[in-house]
Image (cartoon, rainbow, N blue to C red; front, side, top):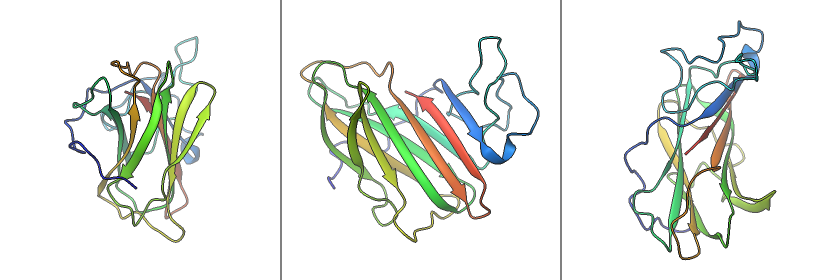
Length: 186
């Protein structure tokens, strides 16, 4: 695993678009796609169907996520970050970072703020996206209350790249077995 070559803690961006789901809350009342005041900050709003109603239940209130671009991105280096925080200990976790490949995007490296918890990122190219996936190491438990950052570094092929179409998905399982899924953009 590489060492980040820029500040791994840039200022968080404004909230981006996204969808939030929680398997155990599937039977709860639909909110019509609105985010509630106690909903996740910086993680977007519920996905809306064509008729303006939410097609996904709200995310659990114990999980927060956001995606951001490193402010030091250049024509030759770009870094995308996914930050998450859980107010419950996690026994299962998958973090997926998706970047629209475009012309010549090349994977360079990845890193996390805690290599004792997370596996090395697995890089794949899927349907026009560069995809990085991290999971928890066998037997690892993410303690409640800490923020973690997972990042992918890429060469944008000699030009600035837009984050349009980039996104992330965080799937987390608490010790009580409740699974929450948060999706968002940059």
